[in-house]
Every structure is written in structure tokens, then in C-alpha cells.
Amino acid sequence: AQSVSQHNHHVILSEAASLELGCNYSYGGTVNLFWYVQYPGQHLQLLLKYFSGDPLVKGIKGFEAEFIKSKFSFNLRKPSVQWSDTAEYFCAVNPGGATNKLIFGTGTLLAVQP
Amino acid sequence: DAGITQSPRHKVTETGTPVTLRCHQTENHRYMYWYRQDPGHGLRLIHYSYGVKDTDKGEVSDGYSVSRSKTEDFLLTLESATSSQTSVYFCAISAGTGHNSPLHFGNGTRLTVT
Picture 1 (cartoon, helix red, strand yellow):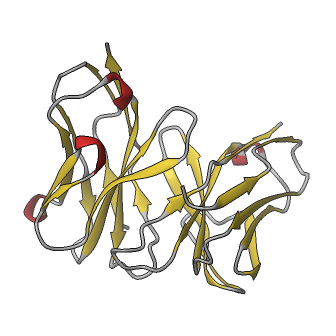
Picture 2 (cartoon, chains in turn blue, purple; picture 1 turned 90 degrees about the vertical axis):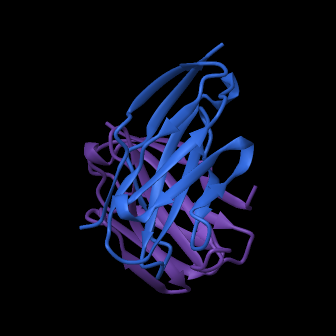
Picture 3 (tube, chains in turn blue, yellow; picture 1 turned 60 degrees about the horizontal axis):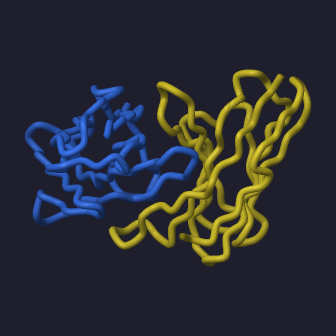
């Protein structure tokens, strides 16, 4: 069965530190990849997405992610985090892209200390 | 934000009682989804709909049923609620399945089964 792994469950950073959150998926075919963010008490919002083309994808709020097909990875990065980035981050995969039935990772809780 | 309204926002119910959660959208999107969010599991797809009266199961559909009699409404029913169904339930919508059709999420319903 397809799965998505987020190995960092809880990350604590100081403001201005760089961020990289890992995401690996298990599916050998064409995939669509997403990162969603959930701020405390809110619903999920789309940060960025990859469907095809340039494997380096830029999203909102200074986030970017790189699709490395050979490693089945789609890691999220931000060069300098802010306190307002405190949230839970979910990687998601749409294997085959047929119906938008996303498979989510278990999430990474990011706490940024001022 | 996409026009998605979930009701109720919070509900406490007893084991064995039926519960219906409602998702209402004003975007006229074709696809609607019900996910549950649990600590350590991320979001898991319960059921989804690809049109009026067209629904299909997700990965955790046991104990749940859905109905979609109108484009704008997607109902999730727990026929006989159990404590394992205590969770936060998110409805999502998308216009299609391509790269221009990401999922948009509602604000969630927090259900507690005692």
C-alpha cells in the first residue's frame, strides 16, 4: 500500500534558523506531491504542490520543496523561520492523480521559539 | 478561503447513538471528501464523492456512511458511534483532479464519543 513518511515528528527551532522537514513516499508511478500547513486551531492550507516540471517548487511564505525522484522524497525547506511559522506540517501524495485522494503523512509539529 | 461550512463545529455524543456531520460548499465543486485527523496518524480518508449520488470508500470507511443528494452537501453518518470514532473530522473539496485543483479544507468538526 502507498504510504507517506515524515520522520521528524516534533521540531523546535529558534527564529532565523533554517528548516528542513523530511518527506518520503512509497509509490513507483507518477505522483503529485503537496505540503499543507495547519496553524493552531485552524484548517489545513496548501503551502505548495508539485505536479511536473522543475523539481524545485516555491510556495507561499518563503517555503520551497525539492522533488527527488530517485529518493522518493519531497523535503520542505525554509532558509529562515519566524515565530509565525509555528504550526503542524503535512506532506501528502496523490498516487496516480486519478481522484485527488490524498495520502497524508503523520505530520511534523514545528515550534519556533522567539 | 474556499466556501466550506462544516456543522456542527463541536459535538459530544454517547456510544451507540447515530451522528451526522454536514459539509456544505458554495463553490459548486464536483469532488468532496471526508477525512479524520488523529494524533500520530495525520489525516486519513474516510469517504469521497465525485458527483451527486456518486461516492466511494477511503482507507478508513468502516463504521461510516455518506450521502450526496446535492452538489453542495456531503453528509457523513456514524450509524452507531464508538469511542474509536472520537476525532476531528475535516471536509475537503476540489474542482477536479488536475494540478489546478488542490484540496481546500473546512474548519473541522471535533467529535467526542463518550
